[in-house]
Amino acid sequence: MTSGLKRYFIEKLASSELRALRTRMRRFDEQHHWVQNRFRQMEDLVEDRFREVEGKLQQVDVAVRAPQPDYAGPSADAVRQLRAEQRLWAQLARLPELPLSGPARSVVFVHHSYYHFYYLAQALRRRGWRALCISLEDPNGVNAPYYHGEDVNLWDADPEQLRVNAEVLFTFAKAHFELMHFAGDGLLSFFPWNFGQPSPPDIVEWRALGKKVAYTISGCNSATRQSSFHAWSGTGREHSACDNCPLQLRPELCNDEKNLAWGGQVHAHCDLVFAELQPSLDFLSSTYPNVVRGPHTMVLDENVWSDTLDIPPAFRIERRPDEVLIYHAFGNYSLRGQNGRNIKGTPAIVAAVDRLRAEGLPVRLMFFSQVPNHLVRYYQAQADIVVDQLWAGSWGANGRESMMLGKPVVGYVNTHENAPSDVLAAIAETPIVNATVDTLLEVLRALVLNPARRERLGRQSREFAMRWHSADAGAQRYEDAYDHMLARRITMEEFSA
Image (cartoon, rainbow, N blue to C red; front, side):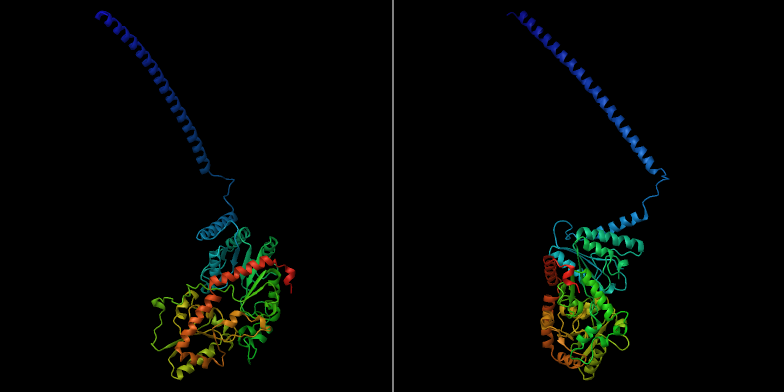
């Protein structure tokens, strides 16, 4: 092929490729313009939509900000309801270990029993319980020095807000708990305005739902006739506890009829009655299947009352190296020690220490009253000997706390029961050194002169308190009582008087 012919075919092919390329470019330009036009259309559409939404939002904003003559805002009760619920749930949020859903043993403690319910609820939660200690009391009220706090406090200075708070508590309790446990004679209700009623409506409703009620006694006149306790506490003695109690002269506070009326009300509504260390008398008799005797609910935290408790400098007592400190305390002394009567035997204790000092023994009495309970342990922990109470026949909070702190304790323990089988194991095992107002002097003298015995008794006290009064030990026994109650399905007829 000649060079001219080659050139002809090359130019022909190039011209054809060029035309095809130009055609494709035109088509690309057309597509590009179409895409650009479509993009501008979509852009315009989005812009229109945005302006539409923005306009509607502006209309809503204007409507919200405009005066609404027909809307007066939420009602006062609605605001109180919201406040009550917020307050409840804000405090519950601090308890991540509390199971509010799923199967669990459950109890709501209402109305304080000193600090006992607070620590018992904690111990029960460690066992997987749904357990709460809730209070409607003023956290700065007259009883506050005896408490260590609560899981939830719904008190309010406004009576109307307090009413709604209590109603919210009751609704919450109905949804989450099977057992309501209260303390305080006459306080059988979630609602303060129902206190004293023979059949509080909320308790009737609670039980109609198949739920249970438990009660912890307050003292020797709880569901027990004064005459019965007088006879028991005077066994083998010239005088009884009642003969030394100011309430014997206050029939409006303590008399047979009143005490039995309360006992009847307790048995009409309560599935469990925790009698603690009280003797088996009247409505606290062991013959009632719903009466639970022995230490169960009056518990302590072993770490709060540690036998190696550090004493803050502000509470340290200056003392001579050989000085023996004898501790005694009496809460509400002005109310419980009147008209020459003293239920704890304080005058005999003062006289005994004075006599020992006169004999030349290096002793000193530490007497305290009205010191907040969470602080008084710092003084108890520095004592060499603790004298609890000399008339009641068992030990109280001071005795429990001092034993948990590992201190030798002196007090009067009455082991008498109408039936020998009713003697409690805790009463039989206690390391408390038994003494009366007549024998106290010789008992104290022997202890002051025998530091090795004091040390041995202190160890025994701690071991005893851990076994009978620690929160975890109490929680185990409480769980057993709860399970027994559910297993037996106690009916009202079973324990009717």
